[in-house]
Length: 211
Image 1 (cartoon, rainbow, N blue to C red):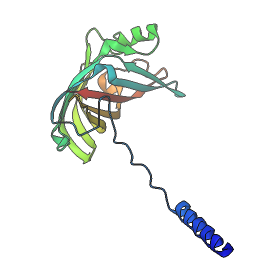
Image 2: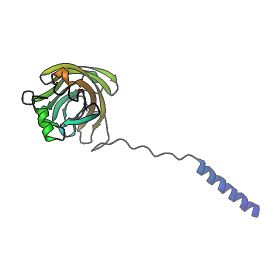
Image 3: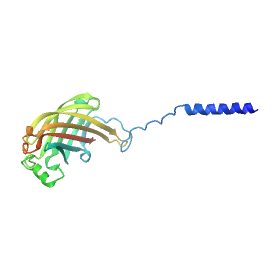
Image 4: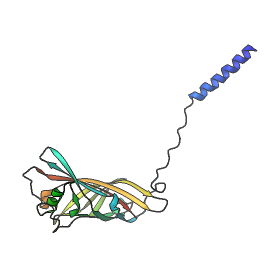
């Protein structure tokens, strides 16, 4: 009888050990969701910029020792987007020059003056694409005309799609970001080039568009 109880106990412990040794199945990862439901690919067609959730930030070298950052607060535009054929899309952006914001009222007035952007004579900075080339599933090289301070030059922007969502309510959202560098002297803005303010300006544009 004692041997029988010992055998039953051994079998029970063996069964417990097997159970503990088996790998536990990880719970299924939840599907990505947005404001109103699961994410799906956005549709083809025109999208308007969501001005509340789009940003333009610039960086410029100061005294050759640090970088100073500022932004433009007002940006509008439209994107014609096709996820299946991103190179066939187009983009138009408009930045209100007077919306420059450097966190200092006096400096903002200087930036709006004829010494820099001359916001009265040139109230808008615009970009209009002329061609696009697919780099990867979510990256496109977009070439277009950048008009700044009355000067228009062709620039190439590497644009990355940062996300896309179709909500349960049917609203379609898509996001893009690009960072590029220009020389302000190429656009006739040369004030203080010899007094510690850099020539190269790095700009980051991050946009959310909807339809």
